[in-house]
Length: 139
Image (cartoon, rainbow, N blue to C red; front, side, top):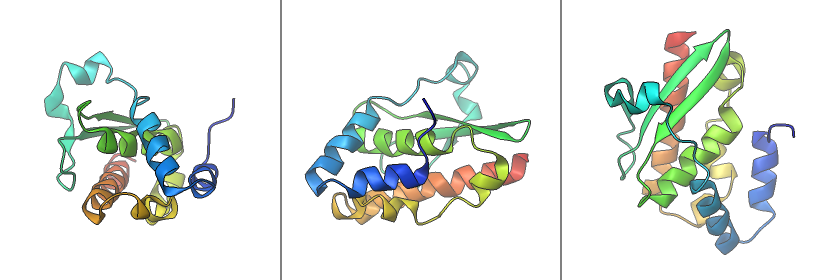
């Protein structure tokens, strides 16, 4: 099955109502991949996303020009986990250039600004900014 693109995901979210967008966000939260042992055993390697209300940490690897994302967020923070999972689903596996040019307005375009508080959207924007910064530093 081909990887879902950001445009596909935007279309999926925009095609449904606000309540269903929240439900879809919660579905994403259940699908955030677990950290591999190399990070789970060394949380000091992860960067805290300070813009998020909930404690979420991320790490970016760049291998042969391909970006891989790793997140950890508590189960009791489904919105934050959902944001991380969404970003993972559309960014993980992209090349460096595509990540660096990824639309900064993506969090608004998926239509969740109508469903969650601006403070929570700020958290998703913070994740995206940190991903791009880490990719830029590691390319």
